[in-house]
Image (cartoon, rainbow, N blue to C red; front, side, top):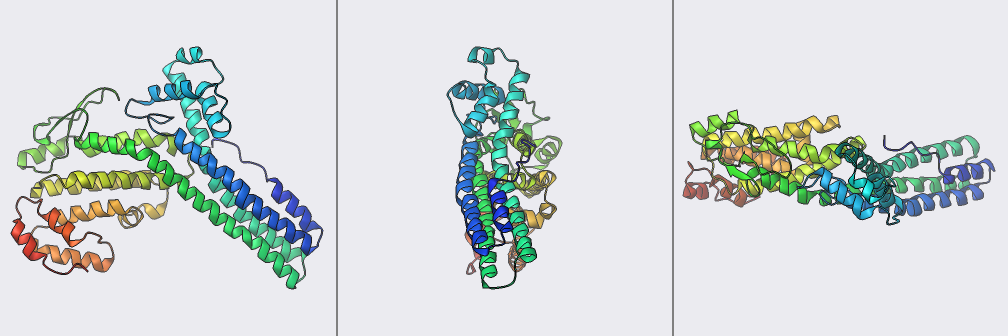
Length: 404
């Protein structure tokens, strides 16, 4: 949706002409050239463009909103790149940000115009990631078409089998493009993780704003802008009855965190292919879950606090499932298999919600048999010790067994 489908590249046309000669040697040579051009030259170009695209989408420095907001980041990007003669994806992004205007004209643009130019730049950067998937699919179809040409136009024999093996080399090319696409998304996730960590830290109360505990929080937070300091609930699971009731009435830190994540991810989700959009969200979710686990380990838990944690984890999982495209990721089981840090978070919630210490061993044993338990015994001891109603000595005595 960010650029029209490209026409069949020269390797296909030239290879089909070679096939039309009916000479296996000529066709084999052309097929080898096709495999080399796609698997080496085009792969290198598209992988490089995706790498540059990731750098241009760095939150706060490129085309995605950072802690200072979208408009300032996009304007700074336009000023720093316009008119510097960049080519390829950098030039496309610069043209999207500046539109060929002089910097004085950029300063006079309205906020809406700047948002529009930024959106175009994001779309063009996203297209560089999509291209890797598009070429992988195209190459897969190309291999099938060539094999049909062999079956229809060449007699059986040793030379024909050699030609078939040359064509099957395109299968390795498909895998190379798919692997390059995965690496590109991993690089993009790494680029976005610093901002993701900021979002989580702000939500749990580790930095920024004036955080107040849920026990004294009497309503949903008011978001007054990216650069404003706001009061908000922080992560706190040491809840008595009154604090628990107030926590149920408020938006809570998870809701605000997910709203901020939406603002970060939504511009890309609108332009990415569904497969890439899912991969990006899973990567971001992993970073969020890892950060949340670290924050959870610093809190104390009452039984009501453990129930509140279970509600928060479910909220996060439903947030992810509502935004994932693949039907295979719509269940909690498959989602946890795809995102191991989230799986750990879910296991922590299950562990902290046991009614009695005697239930812990059964929970761990049953979960291990199902293959969905990753927490070590040391982790379990540390986490169970966070429950204010569990004695540390009893926790240690209960878990005195080998960690299988």
